[in-house]
Each structure stands twice: as C-alpha cells, then as structure tokens.
Length: 223
Length: 252
Image 1: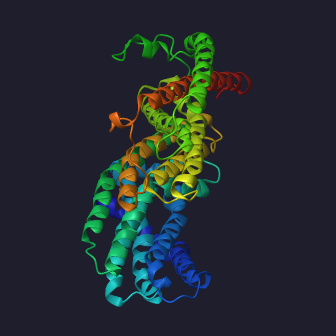
Image 2: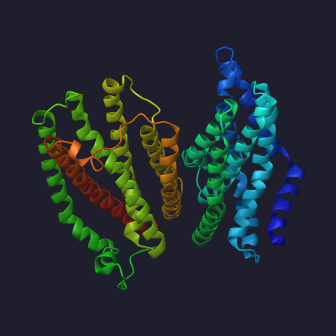
Image 3: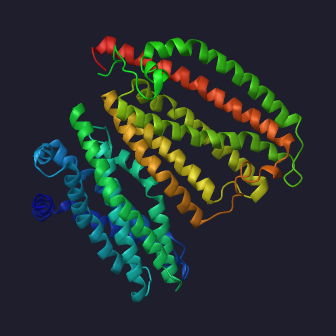
C-alpha cells in the first residue's frame, strides 16, 4: 500500500515542481467555458439552460487533453518498467496513476466548475449538484482514459487517437451527468442520476485498472 | 512473430477451431467458400431487392417508403453482428493466440463500418418522410452513431502502429472495452431520448405480415452471405499481406 501512495505522491511532487500541465488543463477549461457566451445568441435564459452541457463538454475536452500524459512520460523514460518490477501489482500501479491523474485534472476541474457555473448564471445552491456530477464524471474519465491510454503506447499521433477512442465510450457518463445537472436546475430530484453515475464509477474502479495492467503486460512483451 | 504452430493441440473447441488457426488450411477453405457465398449473396440480394421493390405490398401507413426497411434493418443487424463477432474474435485471439482470429477483427472492421454507414444513411432517408426530419437525436440513431465511432476508432488504432502485431493487440483490447460498454451506451441513450419505434421483428412477430417478412429474410440472408464473402476475401488479403511483409522485411 505504501508503494501505491508513493506513486501518487511522486506525481503530486512532479506537479509541484513542473506545474504547467495541470494548470494548462485548468485554464483550457475556463477559456472554453467562457467562449460559449460569446458564441451564443444573447438571449436571456439560454445560457443558463445550456450551462450543464457547456460545463460538461468543457470538462470532457479538458480531461482528454491531459490523458495522453497519464502513462506516456513514465513509459518513454523507463519509469513504468521500474514500477512494474516493484512488488506492487500492475493493477495497483495503474490505479495509482489514474487516481493521481484525477487529483491533478478532474478534482481541479470540479472545483473550477463552481465559479464557472455561477458565471453562466446558475444560482449558488444549484452549483453543488453539478459539481458533484462533474466530480464523478471526471473520475470516470481518468479511469477509462487511463486504460485506453495504455493501449496507445508507441502509436503515432497518440493524443488525437486517444480522444477518438475514448469520447464515444464516455457518452453514458455525459448523458447521466447532464441529466443530473438539468434536474437539479429544474428543482427535480436528481439523486437517481448521481447514483447511476456512481454505479458506473464503481464498476470501472476494478475493471479499468485491471484492463490497463493487462495492456501494460501486452506492450512490455511485444516491445 | 506469430506464425501458425506446426502441431496444433486439439482443444475443447474442437478440431475445426484449431485447424483454422493455420492460414494455409483457411485459404483452402476460402478458395471455394468465398465464390460460393458471393454467388449465393448475389442471387439472394437480387431476388430480395426485386421482391422488396416490386413484389411486396406498400405499408398501410408508411406507403412505399416502407421499402427502405428492407435495406435498413438487415444493415442494422449486420452492423451489430459484425462488432460482436469482432469482439469475440479479439478475445479468442488474445487468449489462445489464434492467428486467424487476430486477423479477422482487422479484416472485417471496414465491412462492419460500411454496414453501419448504410444503416445510418438509409435511416436518415427513411426519417425524412416519416418524422419530417433527416436526423433526430433519438436513442437508437445515436447508439448506432456511437457504434460507427467505435468502428472508426478501432480502425484508426490498428493502423497507428509501425509494428502491425502491436496494432492488432491494441485493437483487440479496445474491442473488449467497447464490448463491455455497448450495453451501457444502449441503455443510457434510451433513458435520454427515444422517438424510434421499437424493433418489431422478434418482439411483435404477428404484426409484420408474411409478405414483408419474405423480402426482409431474403435481404438479411443475402447481407449475411455477402459478409461471409467479403470477410473471406479480406482475410485472404491480410494473410497475403502478412506473408509478403514476412518475406520482404524478415519479420512482421
């Protein structure tokens, strides 16, 4: 277990030392969200109505932006090989990488969605359910994306490829997240949608690291 | 790197399964199966199209536009069938290192994508007179669209590697992730929005008249045989390409 937290701690320290990546993702999210008001007809209420979708698509794109680097740097400089030699099973390594990716992208996006939601005209008490749905959704992105990113080692243009692979698989999460946010904005019960999101996350929690571990082995054998 | 093992052990899947792992044996099979299924497909599709367009009654509500169904529904079936068969082949290829199964998924992916595309286009053409619009963000349309994206993603991934075997392995992994996700995608879009009529062939057997089932059956069987012919042809091509690469580069 200490190796598990050591990997997360290492990623957090790397972020503290280098920074740029996760901060870039955060700014990307804020810039994308603030572009929508310019691109839409200046009609009262329209922005508020589209706010859940805007925030969700913004978070999806921003989350994808950083996915490529979830394992790639470690794979290219050999760190991944060393980690795989440690007593921690490959599944644990993949899980730790996914969790640290979420802490550095998803969790930050979730926090940033609070002010961004208010800027789009959501009442302060309506922002919280939306942030909850985004928190679950970005965790799902990190899990699923971490598994898919392990598939693209050594591929050409792997960043673009990864987006094409992962986005269709995220459709269910997007639908449930937007439904939850819209329901909360309309003062309807939204808990069921959040629970369904949670169900998806819980299902992916063991499956995605297991798949990523299998893909690690596949690539190590063939390279 | 993976050529057919010389002594294939008999497995529980029976002799056919292991015999086919040898590309040479498959080529011998394909030599007569491909032309045969192609000829039968031409025959059935010809008959099916004739009956569908000239010798079947118009629908009492939809009129002549119902004839689009004879292309649309079999294409939808084949779109799903091809993806499921690819996922099964990917599993067999990963677990047993079955050479032909590994190549199969790559070989039939464009065929499946084409069926999906036919389904989307005919659906759009059918939607215009029926629903008054070319495209609606309806649950079943959307899930077929996502299926199309999955095909495109698979083909892009397999082609993105310099080492072809790595591409096949990565593609197989993606197919398995996709297969797990397909039911989730299907249910989620259904909660989200639905306008499409429920599929009516198996659930409400009595409501579709026999005069319409005949062309539908002919077309479905024809599409299936066309798929077999195309799959054989493309597998032959893949095997030839693999042998060529092995001969020229000293490794694949």
